Each structure stands twice: as C-alpha cells, then as structure tokens.
Length: 286
Length: 248
Ligand SMILES: Nc1ncnc2c1ncn2[C@@H]1O[C@H](COP(=O)(O)OP(=O)(O)OP(=O)(O)O)[C@@H](O)[C@H]1O
Ligand SMILES: [Mg+2]
Image (cartoon, rainbow over all chains, first blue to last red):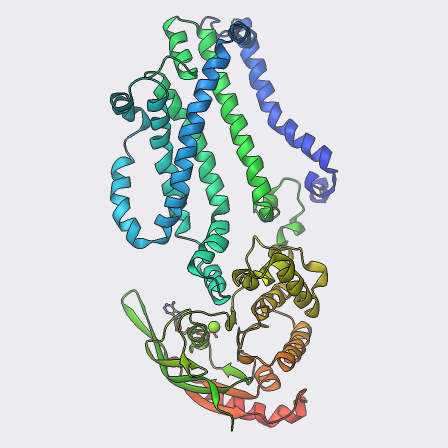
C-alpha cells in the first residue's frame, strides 16, 4: 500500500558511517534552531537585548574570559569538585545500594535514616557544610557528595530488589557461592540500572556544585554566575549557563559511551526499535 | 538389586503465601539407582517442579529427608544441576560463556572452560552460535544451551524440568535422541519432568506418576525395553499410563 510500509529504517541497510552521521545530525538540528532563534530574536527587536543578548555577544564575552585565563580556572575548580564528590558518592552508593537491595535486614535499619535525609535538598546542606568545613573546596565536595549519594543509593537498591531470582537460582545450582552469585549474576543484572543511576547522579552533582559555589567559595562556575549577576552582566550569566549545560552534556555522553561498551550484550534487545518510524508491521514480531 | 543412590524419604513441601498454606508435596518417597533415567509425570500443579527444586537444594523440604549417596543434601551443589522450566540463560553472556558458567565458578581457567563448553555446544549442534547472545537464539537453541550448561560441570544428578516443552516435534525427537546418547555416554542419574506421556515412556527406565495436588507417588512403571523404542512396543504402556493419569 503505502511507501511507509516498505521503507527500511537506517538501522537495517545504510552503512554504519552514514547511520552515525544521521544520528549526529538528528541531535544537532534542534541545537542549531535554538542558536538561530537566540541570535535573531534580540537582533530583530522581538525581545529586549538587555534581557537576552544575542548568542554572538554572549560568546564574545567568553573570549575575554578565556584570554585572561580566568574561565579555565573557574571551570577547573567546578569540575574538580564535581569529580571528587561524585566519585566518592559512587564508591559509597553502588556497593551500599546493592547490599541494601539484597538484605532485608540492612534495609530495615537504614531506610528510616534515608527517608529522614531525603527531603533535605542540597542547598539546605550549605550552611552546615560551611560551619563544618569553612570556605573552599571541602564544603562544595561535601555537598556534591550528600546530594548525589542517596539518590544513587536508593535507585540501585530498589532495582537490586527486583533482580530475577531464577537467574540467581540458576547460578546457585551451577555451584556458585553467594559471593560468586552476587559478582557474576546480580552485578551484571544491575548493569543497566547502575549506569542509569550514574547518569542521574552526575546531573545532580552539577546542580549541587552550583548551589555550593554560589555561597561557599570564591572560585568556580557557580561563583562566576553569581558575580556576573551582581554586576548585571547578562552575557556572562548566559555564558556560564551555556558552559554548565555543555559540560553536563559532554560528561553524560562520556558515560553513555562507556555504558555502550560495558553493556554490549544489550544491543538489539530494547523495545525502542519496535517503535522506530518506518518499520514495517511485519517486523514487530521479531 | 543395586543400592539406591538418590533417596527421598517421606518428603513433604508446604508453601506459605499470603497467609495461605499450599501443600505441594505430601509424603513422597522415592528411590533412584545411580545412572537411572527416571521420568516424573503428573497433572499441572502437582509439585513436579517443586520436587526438582528440593533435590537441587534450592528449597528445603518442610518434612522428610533427601539423601544422595547416603548423605543428606545441604543446599545446592555442582553434582546436582537443574535445567529450569523457564529459560534462565544469562542474557549478558554469549552461548559459550553461559555453558562455561559452572566451570567458571569451579575455578577452571578461561581457555580450558571455553574449549570444553565449545565441544559441548558442538555435540548439541550449536557450533555456529557459540558467540551469540541468548536473545539472538531460537527457543529450541536456548533450551539446548541450557542443557549444555547443566551438563558442562559433569553432574552426578541431572534434573530436567520439561526441557523440550517449547520446541517443535521434529526438534524434540532430535533432542531426545541427543539426551539418550549423552546419558548413555556419561551415565548421570536423571530426573526428567515431562507433560508428554509418550516422551516419558520413550526415554525413561522408570516412570513415576504423581497424583494431583498435593502430589504423592501414585504409581511406578518400570520399562525394561531397550532404546530406541517403537510406538507399537509402547502402545500398551501408553494405555496404562493414560489410565493412571486419568484417575481423579
Ligand atoms: N514459591 C511458591 N510459593 C507458593 N506456592 C508455590 C510456590 N511454588 C509452587 N507453589 C505451588 O505449589 C504447587 C506445585 O507447583 P509446581 O510448580 O511444583 O507444579 P508443577 O507440577 O511443576 O506444575 P507444572 O506442570 O504446571 O509446571 C502449585 O500449586 C503452586 O501453586
Ligand atoms: Mg513445573
């Protein structure tokens, strides 16, 4: 009937390079549109250029900062805090989450504490962090840590509870010890969930570091942001926001690439393919 | 007569779910010789899977005892492997690594366990699919991988829970032949659960008939004939088995 029924998705026929290019373009297109709007709307007078300076002016503000070397310093300060706090959180939360998910008893002890801590948002930790650690990297790292650790932990614990018991039983009948069953079965079962939580955690870590840097330190992107606001430098404010977004995006991409390498076995298992546009009805059965 | 190797003594199993007690097995006693091929048949829900899980050590009996070579079994062990009723291949491992899993937990080095797993896959007609993931295999192929995985550790007791339920008649026959060949070569003790009367009679030395839930041993049929057995030969047995299963 229609051409749509016979159209073959890129996935099936096109060479890998063309595929990758198309995927890349799909991601870039909305960005280009947003960039164009950002540039043209203030220039055409559609919005007030004082409130939203055009993209080019925003970027130009960045050039000065880069030349002076200040931007790199601020950037590095933020990245270092996020990295340290986030890594600490991951190191604690992943094993603890698995343990919590597998042990009812442990969960009984710990979950009230977690429930109590959960409503305390990262900015609410800032005053305590300053009292404890003073001003500098330490309070910021602390806030990143407390802000991400429980989110990752709770996410992993809840999926660890739902690991397919048949697979664990299969391992046990094949002679696996409890330890081996956890390492060789539970951990790989949790792989996708762990990566999901790591990505959520990384985004959270960026939010936390901003909250911390707006008060507790004199360096970092968050500080730059607040300082720019105090000086009414709208370009700089926007610039910082763009940088924060771009950094977050880049790090997320990095995690996804890693995920793709570690979880190779998942390829071709997801339901997403079934809904791909242009796929013939017959293919749905596969 | 040879001494029994696997003994179930008055084994009962009661499950407790949502405050309700479900009796799955009541007072089941069973003696199995070493190297014997025993088939278990009975209506759905009569406790066949439960019985295999008890022997595998995945669950403990509520009453009674299970002895292997005179010793009470304690938990799971490599000498008793189980092919589950549902597919339980590890989706993140290729076929060959699935088969090699038991050897891995036993500490066999990578090269050796891969080689042994490959040889097993080959003997089951899966040589081209060693590096495929389970989701890339057909249902029948997956079942063969699962059987290979259970065989790889050279178990004394092989527990098979309706292993050929999901394959077509032709594949089924081929797999049955393959199983008999492996059994004759290695002589594991086999407990084989099946819904198919014909299958039970074609394969087993002895067929145990369980009553509807709660499961008890209702009858035993000892089949002295050599394999392969012809349908003509089996016709009278089939008649008897049908009668036994039809009783309320
Ligand atoms: N984990 C469990 N919790 C509660 N009840 C259970 C559990 N496992 C099995 N049962 C009950 O025990 C009875 C026997 O179940 P079992 O799976 O052993 O039957 P089966 O003979 O293998 O049936 P089928 O031929 O359909 O596979 C059933 O009534 C079932 O509801
Ligand atoms: Mg069953």
